Length: 119
Picture (cartoon, rainbow, N blue to C red):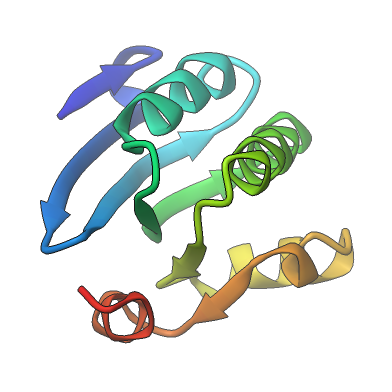
């Protein structure tokens, strides 16, 4: 677990079988986005699979959306399957309105994401 940008963002990761789970807790904004991106990307092993758990993400700014876009592009280049799960209604709506929801396979829960990727 790594605290990013003070107590406003915590990035934690762990392996569940062949799947890496990265959970973002707190606010993904201009103060936390750069460090959070580094933490997410560092957690993904080459040839791995990623579940990005946003169930405890409380705020998503345009900088946070950009971070998710950069993560998506990087993982696509590496051919790493990624599933986003657990988004609150507010976060899901932000992603939908901005057109970014379509970039990711989105599932309701962490368990759903793990099942999807074989974890």
